[in-house]
Length: 358
Image (cartoon, rainbow, N blue to C red):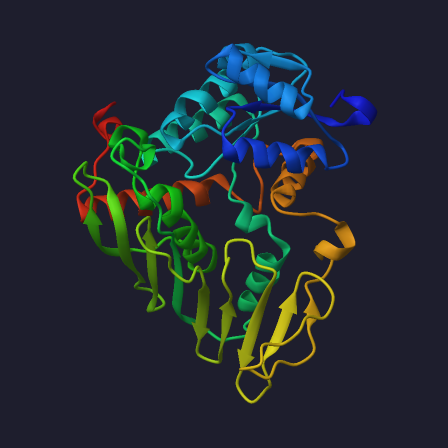
């Protein structure tokens, strides 16, 4: 890493909303530099560069991939272009952080993972939830047996948007629908706690274009008897909450479960306990919650981190350690999530043009 003061030098590939949010967080992160941006057009890349004070702008993805001063590339295109964009960067010898959903399907995801492993390059799906300190603390408690054996996981991610027929979320060629944009969060949440399911059932409301507008999923794990009830929607504003119920208790994660500020642990014979990302919080009036318990070393108050910076820090840590994948977001886990998303699409009858390739 040869940036200023040994900083990790980032290139941002794409200039949409998530790229802007990511760049804002990255610019405020010590030890990181944004040195280049690329888009399919020079005008878009240059406008983004001016907005964020980025020194170099490329009107092609290849230009960024060939930039010798870029240590790692963040791929922020729609997921329909992840295979092409991330593959181009890996072929050029660049480590990659690729937005979620990782790709359009498991085949494309497998191709990227194979390429990264053959080249000995770092690759990670940008599943920021897995890097969040509150989620990590929740996972530790579950694995330490705080609620016994998991029996049910529930999670939903739905919003009521005005997405007309010309919107990318209605276009099968762009991987449109609720599942890959929003459903990837509850599915990944279930995978984090239970691994890959061996039973997948699903039902959906489809658009005239053939993408899912609202999808309900029931996942099952035969070995443990656990199940997950999940939902995603682009036509309904759902609670955006999650819960994990075990044989000895339950964890409730409030609205915004994919990047929570707190969760409440309910254990048999004990008062509810609230775990937060910062100082002691105020308990909800409906539930008597005991003293808050900070999440520990990754506490956002002590680190000063925010939003997407947790995954950014993890990428930089791994790069400096010479690791080719993150233990927090392992590639085998991303592949498993893509297999589950494929299975859901198979059950609800959603196909993308890219599925028939190869």
